[in-house]
Image (cartoon, rainbow, N blue to C red; front, side, top):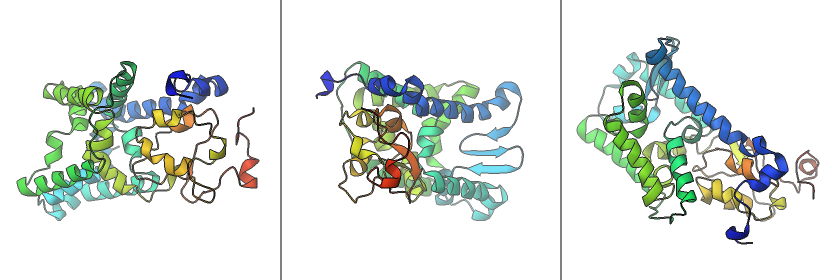
Amino acid sequence: MSRATRPPVGQEAIAVHGWWHAHRFLVLRRISQLFFLGLFLLGPWAGIWLVKGNLTSSLTLGVLPLSDPFVFLQTLAAGHPPLLTVATGALAGAVIVALVYALIGGRVYCSWVCPVNPVTDAAHWLHTRLGLKKGWQPKRGTRLWVMAMVLAVSALTGSVAWEMVNPISMLHRGLIFGMGFGWTLVAGVFIFDLVLSRRGWCGHLCPVGAFYGLLGERSLLRVSAANRAACDDCMDCFDVCPEAHVISPALRGSAGTSPLILSRDCTNCGRCIDVCPESVFRFTHRFDDRTSDDPVQATQPGATRAA
């Protein structure tokens, strides 16, 4: 069945499981993004300082330091003395954040925390509604080169280079102090994804996403196509996945191959779980490689959809 003759993406899942089940992880992601952003805005907007700082570096409840490990690496590359970073709590904060994302999946940051994600998701939604062409698609390894270039520029200039143009930081500062030039950068990301390159920013260029992908390469949290035998090739999972190339090895694997999505590019956004009417996908851990062919797994509720 061609895409033109199939129901709109997610409609089958809504018909089978209901609206909430077909959107639950999308809604929870938006709540999560608003929650983290709100924590930082409570202080300047309402005088409630639960968290001081921003996603780059913060202090929670006056005792817990958290720092972006990618920014910390830029600080070291820029030649700032390690002892200074220890004294300011940056090292402890970077280690805490790095351990958390190494455990749950580095690119969870991209889909569940990053405030730019709704911007790029909105651009993709409009791109699809307008029926625009896919556009220029840089190689996915480009973001790794951008990440390396950022560290090199930090070393050459003695500055935390990326923070001067980071759309994440610009958006956060803009919400507090007024956008100014920040609007230009955020709008640029939106227009880039809308017109020039479908899902181009997060999928091909963002060095922050590249770093967190490397950080979470061996993480525990995984999506599994455990019920892949029930797949009816509706392609909805490919349509909604921001990194669709990660699905095929798990979904199309032959008997005996792992159903786990193990690519570091997976953002664990859960949209493939949302939109699948056959309940093919689920969240699990990296050591759970059972499929619906396994007798134990096949007897679990929801393993297959009733005919």
